[in-house]
Image (cartoon, rainbow, N blue to C red; front, top):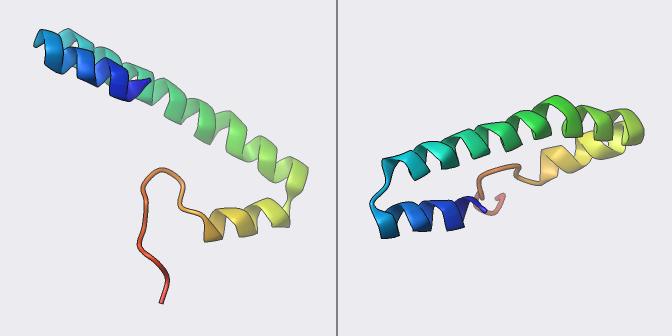
Length: 65
């Protein structure tokens, strides 16, 4: 969704669409951090915490050495 909004911003040269993409990202981020992650941790406990330690959340990371 964000890639499409940012693509439209480039296509139309609209800073308003860039702002809209930022607001959309902030809403998704707030939902994931404020609701989804605590809920999954409550349901799955240590299993989910182990998953979060092993899997990058938002940004890719290189292989572990």
